[in-house]
Length: 540
Image (cartoon, rainbow, N blue to C red; front, side, top):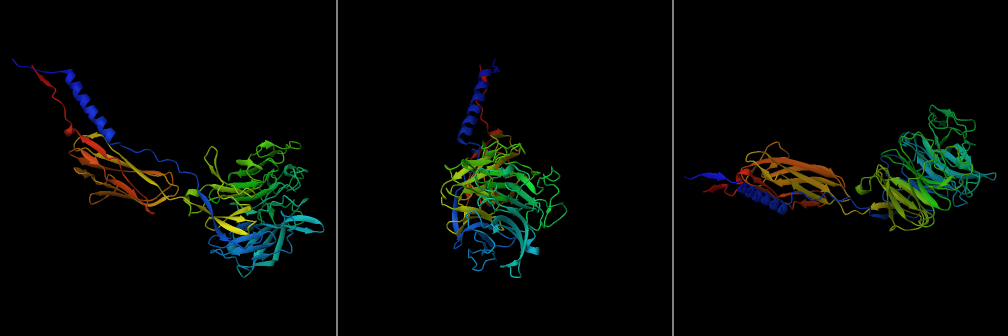
């Protein structure tokens, strides 16, 4: 009599062979590529833009849609630079007879256009004037004339003056915030070491950020305006309003030594401020957009993160320390605060805060990570005299070199987007059931990829499932994507059915600037009907 018996050892042998086959297949046909690597550091350079300027110390633009740049010359003139880099011969403003530039830190130092300049033609300057043996910082309002390339030099209204006891540490910047108020960073009065501790004295404006409403809207009466017209009001939410007697209501923040160049991030409203150090450290201070003011940036109690002179400290003891500081003189001698790049020409630079040093020519870029700041130092741009950054109307950045009398455009030299593509799918499936494939596209470059086209050819023996993803163009599934940012990653999926084992190996992505990637790892899916088992029946 014949009988059949299924032996357990045979089952194990069959399973072992099937498992080994799948392992070998998966080893030969890797299912996905490694994740994209992080983008590298910025590759910066400077492109000559304008020349022939005399002692330039500042640069800015007037209003949205206006491609002109306005360069501040310390001697008392403002020059217009056309979009092609041509400098107009006739100054936009000439107050050389009013600005005292006899000392290297004096003269015409700052310029800001009213947020509504396009309709009201108002702009503001910060300059040092000397009369009767007394030097004063003047914050003055001017009006443009009927000629858009010329100001009315007789329209000056002196809003505020601040007596300067010494010829240095005059700071000189002024800028409008997202709230429409005028912010004026002022130095500590000069000499060395802030001998009168002005920066911690709430009864003077020296060593402070002043915040005023030049539109004289609802607010308090000016109380520390010196000999100016007082043609402004104090915003009701300034932190010193209603304080003890003798406190200047105009104060927004305290503890500055010689703030040289400040800027608001046009995307976030955050304030960045370069503050020149005494002997050891140069620093960048920061105020988030949500701040209610009142920060104490430490001087003269602290220089950078280190104590300097704690005598007389204690007005506001909750110090706000810098987000970045570097050694003086090892890394430079005088910080030049910059801007967060928000232009469109160099996507890799977006969100990076750029700064430099006047003496060493070192540049740095800072990026906020959420928990801190990543800092990269750039030593390839070295030159003496980088004294100011500025934005044009589109957010592109420029750097002024005082010693050379020139303006340069800041350039980021990335090579373009670097695309990657990988694919995943099931190793096995049953005949007739949906088989879903997923494509992963990454950009490892420093530049955004634009106008991406992603394609995948339906493998032989498979049938596309309509509506499962993409659109079918003959035998090819296709997707289009407008943009993929640096370090970005996207996924696209579709499904097929099959009645036999399929190998999916023809997929890729293309984009502008000849960026492309082709899939290199086939994805094999074994159909259950194709499994081959060894005989499991033993005859005895």
